[in-house]
Length: 108
Image (cartoon, rainbow, N blue to C red):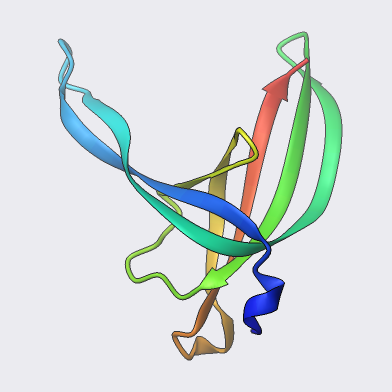
């Protein structure tokens, strides 16, 4: 990957358990903001109805330099929108770059 392809700035955030609620469930917060450069490529967008509400779903592919410890429990913040990471791929298995597939859902 050439550095000139990394045109966008994104923020990676991971989920951190901060305690337990009254019934013993995990309480979490998003933290460890890490700002990285990325190549952003929209893959798909669709509208559908769920629970009688119209929903929009956007799927984006983010390509970044390899980031140790990154997995699908993290999320991406890009252009003011949060994207849940669905898949993390070590491109060519060489530890040089990651390709993230991520999606967001929004009520209309």
